[in-house]
Image 1: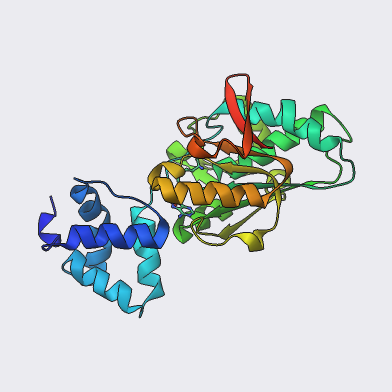
Image 2: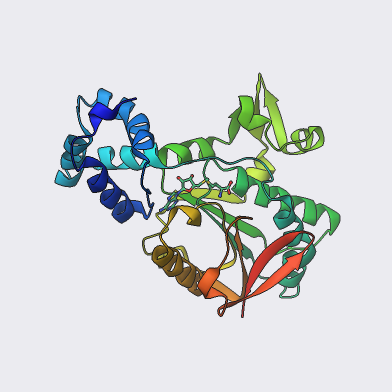
Amino acid sequence: MNRHLLGPGDYEAFQTYLQGACGIVLGHGKEYLVTSRLAGLMRTNGITSVGELLKRVKAGGSQGLQVSVIDAMTTNETFWFRDMPHFQMLSDIVFPEVESKPGRSMRIWSAACSSGQESYNLSMTAQQYISAHPGCLSGGVEILGTDISNRILEEAKKGVYCGLSASRGLGAEQRERYFISRDDCLEVRPEIRRRVSFRSQNITENYSLLGRFDVIFCRNVLIYFSAEKKSDIIERMARALNSRGYLFLGSTESLSSHSNLFEMVNHGGGIAYRLK
Ligand SMILES: C[S@@+](CC[C@H](N)C(=O)[O-])C[C@H]1O[C@@H](n2cnc3c(N)ncnc32)[C@H](O)[C@@H]1O
């Protein structure tokens, strides 16, 4: 245990800093999480306490250090076709609705995309829909993956998955259809990649420059935020959606106080929220 890295008051100061920087709320008793995640970074930078690290970050001399702290503290857990009913809802409900507005491209935002599996899965779902319905989605599908962590975005952009990340959630048929095998790794095929782009975005900050979307996937990230921050993000996502656009949250997350902006759509074991 690296408890010696925390001086008196350091944990509380770090809680306040992290919530302000990226919205993540650290509850009581997470000292071990903080010291274990930051120990390597502090060692590399010759920093001996979390208090000293905070001073360096707040002095603003090194933007790189701030990004590394956020990178170390975010949980990037993800896997292929997580919450499969959501992807089925796209094919069964969302794509046919957009198709009824011909000639226009569809925009999907994978907010908090981690290492890219969710974003590429959206493209795979579009690909499968187009193969089954030739001539459909003719205006094209554009998928934007964003995350606060630059380190994880670099992995997403590569589109190459090895070890556990190449197997979790994938069946043999999907591996064959959507990937090229390279040694022990899988590379996402170019026809899947070409719809997807990645960029950095903190969802607690202004995202009006990203434009409007037909669908937003914001899954398994709101759980880290305070109720107030979560409300603010959901309200701003509602403004970033086109008329009758869809918001998908993680299967353990809910809209809570914002149900007035959306109507709930239940289908095949999945839930989505359609803008009223
Ligand atoms: C648990 S992963 C979820 C990935 C994917 N959406 C899924 O459901 O499998 C959470 C992601 O949220 C990102 N994240 C945390 N705080 C964020 C913020 N304020 N803005 C954008 N992304 C954030 C983390 O870097 C991490 O990659």
